[in-house]
Image (tube, rainbow, N blue to C red; front, top):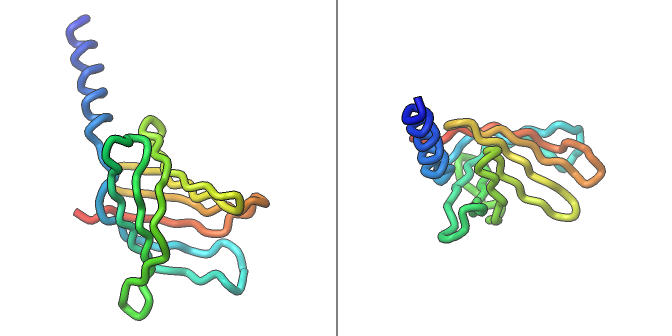
Length: 125
């Protein structure tokens, strides 16, 4: 019995350590307010691991405009592997993304607590 528990624990540890969010993710970023500056968008996120920093990933966020990608920016997100979350925080806003297999769901919350966008992404295979 102890061997079985040890094997299961080891398998869980190995799989948790080898899972990576790195890759190309595509989906939608939808407005949740009626702000004139907000537009629903098709998006592509390119996620890269950061060497020697397992708690950080680099994300380049692009939107699709007239069939062409337009880069919105590149940022380092905190990666909480245990909770499967990615977070990018500034004084004015927080992106919080939750990874579940080959799907990411997330939201952009403003400093006043307003949820400004919701996003869903699917990983390319």
